[in-house]
Amino acid sequence: MRITGKTYIKGLIWGLFSLLTIGNATGQNRLPFKKGEILNYELVYQWGFIWVEAGMATFSVADTVAGGQTYFKFKGYGQSYTHWDWFYKVRSTYESYADANLQSKRFRRYGQEGSHQYNRDYHVKSDSIYYKIADEKTETKHGTLPTVKDAFDVITAIYHCRTLDFSKMAVESKIPLTFYLDGAYHPSYLRYKGKTIWKDPRDDKEYACYLFKPALIEGTIFKAGENMEVYVTADSRRIPIYIETELSVGKARIFLM
Image (cartoon, rainbow, N blue to C red; front, side):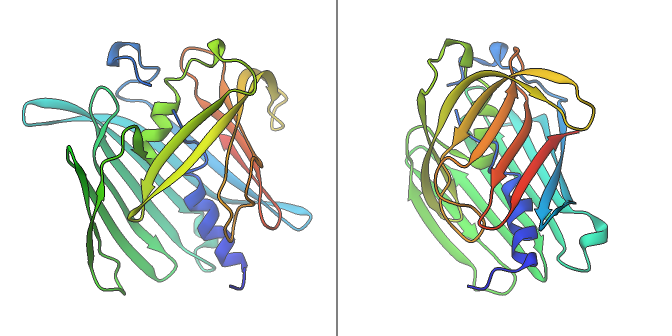
């Protein structure tokens, strides 16, 4: 496969939804986030010797009621900046509905990447996940996956990760993660690297953070292995504040705005 600039813009915007993941919730009252939280991120890509501001993403927490029960509604929206749309337009939405224990009940991924439009829907039952892949230019596909304990959709995994108490972990601890996407399960893990200080290059402010490295799967965008660094605030909210990762070509940085 020929790797192009368009491939990187597509992959990096998608990566905003997968770079932050992993995580055991202990009850809604102790969760480090709540209804109304909104986090905005900007993605900067190293193109040769220059850094290019390529896209943004917003993650939000709301709730909804179904069958008399309240569920979290997690939403992630990512897009290329409009001045990149002529090159490769991305408008991508991820939605997850999860219970108080962060067990997702429904997950959707839909949007546009270039000229390709897609719509993928997952309904989680006690023994199976039923999914429909209805991409614009392909035949609609229906399928099932067996339910796997402690497997997450990629959006709920972000919030599940924030329930981890890194202060009680030993450095080099390895935490497993399994998530489902595009009709398949993907096993991974993160490795905790300890507490550190991260300095924001935009204003030189310093933040106490926990640092971990997720294991990446090799593809057209990422190198396999622990080539990504994720910094989350070392406080009760554990917000992902900065991410840096090596790519097959170049690097990417993601900043909390």
